[in-house]
Amino acid sequence: MSATAAQSSRNNSTRTRILEAALEILSRDGPAKASMAEIARRAGLSRQGMYLHFSSKDELTYAAARHAFEVQHANAQEMLASRRPFTERLVGALMAEYASLYSGTRSRAARFWQGYEAPVIDRIIEMRNRFDRSFVELLAGALESDGAVIGPDDPHARSFVDLATVLVAAARGLTLSTREISTKDRAELLRIAVTRLCAPSR
Amino acid sequence: MSATAAQSSRNNSTRTRILEAALEILSRDGPAKASMAEIARRAGLSRQGMYLHFSSKDELTYAAARHAFEVQHANAQEMLASRRPFTERLVGALMAEYASLYSGTRSRAARFWQGYEAPVIDRIIEMRNRFDRSFVELLAGALESDGAVIGPDDPHARSFVDLATVLVAAARGLTLSTREISTKDRAELLRIAVTRLCAPSR
Image 1: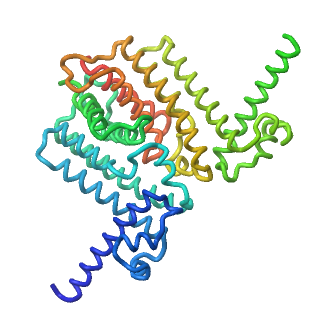
Image 2 (image 1 turned 180 degrees about the vertical axis):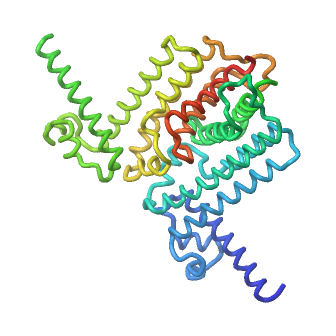
Image 3 (image 1 turned 90 degrees about the horizontal axis):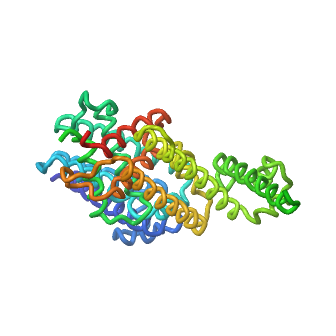
């Protein structure tokens, strides 16, 4: 490894360490109360050292959200490509894609947004929307190649994209559910959704 | 009608007028910027006249949210009790129960919460949760009495409450969707969900 490559790899892992520290502190304290000094400390850096990577809390928030979405998306892709049975792959991918940021109660989700200015919210939502669109396409592809059924006996389902959209809606709705649903119960409910939505003629 | 009854009915309709004006202004401007004076004007009252009914913006917000949820819930119940075909009744009830407050983009939904203090958010969410629980029970009852299928051929669906929970999750997920989904498309996607989730052995 050249000196430059080593430097770049070290910067990369420092960056990831900061992003993970930021996610932890931001989701615990909310953006208004989260302290940049505490995030730096958690990442093992001086505050000045952190500012070399991220010059503002908004910039750090945005990068941390992107990092979380990327990790979730990569886990979901890996699950879709795995050798598990059809239903388990789909349930696993839905659980992975909507794993962390929206988990917990509605109250926590609503509070997550407090303290952010509208432009930051809009950027993060637009980013999440891009991941969602990409995930719906991935899922629709998996449904098509792996045996989901859209037949002439089914007047309503028009496309694999429609089925994927409904599945994603259910997965997202369950993460913000009325009651605290355990991860196990969420997976069980998604199993119902996948089984019934995707293979009605079994 | 006695003088007291007439007075009470007039107070009632004044109250409703204020609540509807408040919903309009609050959802347009957000709670931070919404003006109590403008809400009073919209309701055809003086600001002092309005304060006889609601002594603070938080109290008005809470009452306006309850009013909106009650109207949605009543419409959903009416739809479930109607004489339309099974699928249309269910789709109609889901559309009615999740009609207005969460509609629009995620950005708008996220902004809705900005400017509220945590205690107000928690009270409104707890109230919404109660409506959701009641709606899940109503829906589960309708599924059970109206022919949804849970059979020995289906290892996953454990109860009508589970099916209702998945349907509600899909309905809520669709109101906060990635793309702007038109009301017509939302109904079409819910029709897929209802048809496939509730009558898999057709």
